[in-house]
Amino acid sequence: MRIVVLTTVTMVAFAANSILCRLALGDAAIDAASFTTLRLISGAIMLLVVSRFTSRSRATDSGGNWLSAAMLFVYAAAFSFAYTSLSAGTGALILFGAVQATMVLIALRTGERPHRLEWLGLGAALAGLVYLVLPGLSAPSPAGSALMAVAGIAWGVYSLRGRGVAAPTWATTANFVRAVPFALIVSAITLRGISLSPRGALLAVLSGAVTSGLGYALWYMALKGLTRTRAAIVQLSVPVIAAAGGVAFLAEDVSLRLIVSSVMILGGVGLSVTARHSESIRVRDPARPVQEPAGRSNQGDEATAAERPKRAGSEKDS
View 1: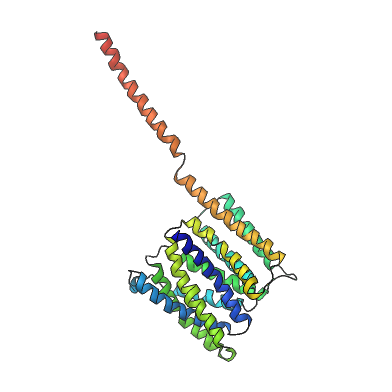
View 2: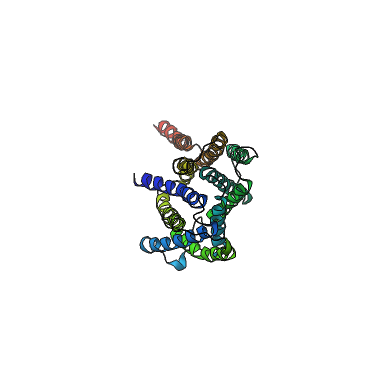
């Protein structure tokens, strides 16, 4: 039950990032560069506090590095600038599709050979993504879509680089801290276009400290009770929650194009994930229940065959 609660809260937090960003930028309560900077700073502070009280590892053993921090910054900055022209649901869907496609393509590059159903799932997801951004009356902004795709690629690379680190919370904390200087540079470059209101600053801090910093910390706790497949599948809910939040809090419309592309992208990713899980089970444990009895039967036959000459000899002597 604890894992279910942690997972549910985390998925809502991840979706809330899209809603908070859209709330802040849609009303011009803050500019995208300032939102990014405040989000990273507040996220770093929250993670420092959480890491100090929950992690036994030291910051020096964190596993964070400058390349991962750069990927985190690219994700955060592109995410913010994309939401100046995208709805919450559309942005979350493009982000999610780009993340999954990036991780699959990198896996291919490193030598993994997908199952046929994985190829089918990847094809369906990419087709849904292409359909979503095709030109038309209900198509999202091309610039916003491209920026969100960049954010998804950066997050996919960041996620893969973070696999297997000994202290994930400390690693995320270190990367957030390292990403702050990049954000400050962008804020300095765009200083003339700064737009900062108390409401916008509050939304940025909430996004950084609560739905990002605290959200990531809770996610690492939830991952201890989830398989990789379940962890991937539950994330399918994030774009759906974001779209629902966009309707509830931002009065956004849900178009037929968004619904169809959502089914294609989320269905494709779900098919790919479940196919990968089934294949790993088949390879790891091939027909195990059949082999063991067969082995025992053969051993019994061999023992019986070995005993026959002895019995025959005994009978002859008698």
